[in-house]
Length: 98
Length: 341
Image (tube, rainbow over all chains, first blue to last red; front, side, top):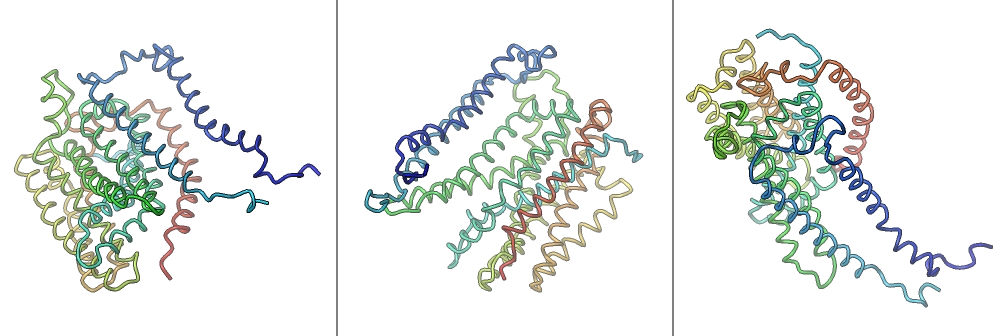
């Protein structure tokens, strides 16, 4: 009785799926950021300050910028590839679905 | 040198076993990338396809061993980890970039060129990045090992930037060990690849490459040993004077000759066992050569070890983890590495 309609034609379900898809990633990342930022200025709470833990090598801006640029570039590539995958997914017309 | 085995030595030994597994499994993946770069002859395309097929499903799993080594270092030997991370900051960062680029390029390459209207060029460029990162990363790994094994990594004594962060690892001996690592990984990959195909012509390609890289290993390994002796490095003395030195050299030599002989006579299964044995013995020779030092010239395994309770807890955790890890790995290899029937 409750499966009156084909699930793939349930517009609100589909919309919810689109919203839910990235939620897992966002939650993981958000939780991570909360623990990392919330712990400051400690790297180990009550034991060692972040400023005392950092490597003494001067010029840390260079690796920081390098890794940031690397992951931004990889992020762009991943987004573009996912976009291509979506474009390429089989199109189901209304008649086929019916 | 007395061989007293406590929890510290036990953990160090396990870290060495994990490094050995990484070299035999992950190393061959890097070597595969090198052969992608050097693909040549009439079966160029088939060579690249076989490398991709052989690496495909398992390369990420192989990094489990490197992660284990890193975790064991920072939980059980924090002063050693701190010194490595500070002094080897530049090669370790570059190595990390190499590993990341290599893995992503490998994945990206297989996602391009799947549909009409795709730029075949894009796939080609990702292939280049994959191959170049595959070749550069082992050299960097070897540079780090060479820095440890050669002059050692003394506590930074407040010199300039170059003296503290570059000079310790950028040595002739370090570069030689880097090239040796590259040759060893390429050799392993070529030997493994002889067993990954049923095509006789393709198999001959890998046999020739395996024999060629075995020769390169021979030359570079003796070059490294000669340098270690000429520069009177800690490693050179450990490799020639210790009580285990002679048997170890004999065993390594026998494994090398068996590998070459088996390749020559096309007995590929024997060649695979002998090649893996040879590479492992070289690794254990390094470890034995610098025992009891974790970081020559001054930091021993005992001196760098965390408090006993940490080591004991880690050993229990390792035992529990092994119960999960080993069956999973066996299953993974059974699923993806079944011999072609």
